[in-house]
Length: 204
Image 1 (cartoon, one colour):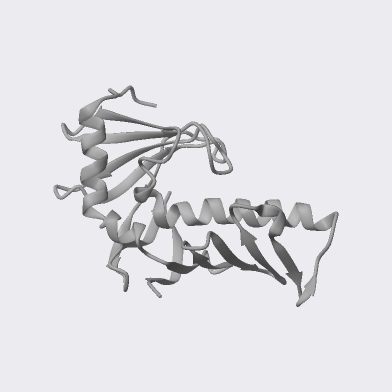
Image 2: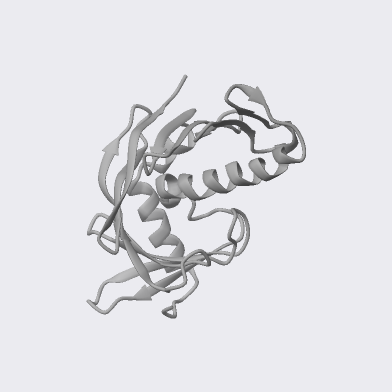
């Protein structure tokens, strides 16, 4: 993982990225929905902090602030303890991972985040972001690369879920959503596509 420099330049770099992705519009977005890898389906009510997660035969109505209030159904039948705890962990893990591929550029100033400017080999600069807390896998790092307008084009990952460090994933096919937030609909890593379908962001 490259070395970088903390400070005002790094913070300004992050602010430029957030400007490029219409972060203010994202903050004011009420709902985001998407399907990840054609398997997991989400409707996230950002306003209330709740998410409907569907996978296989399951549906979880996640309460992100108070997970104990979450309800989980299997084939429309309520799941109780002890299976509920395991499924709750799975639903939260799915959401944390799959939402990151949608909203990562909007999480540059989350609590516990370190930002560093990195000199890249081509003479340009990148932004190294490390998450020391939050999510399912704290400690993960991402090196953002951007175009001349500071719109992200890719990031390199040093994450606990992937044994090889520095794998690069593209961020492309950006779209202006109904709420005005600018979101990426397509990623590719190691030549393999990471499909995102049915992506919408809107306000009530």
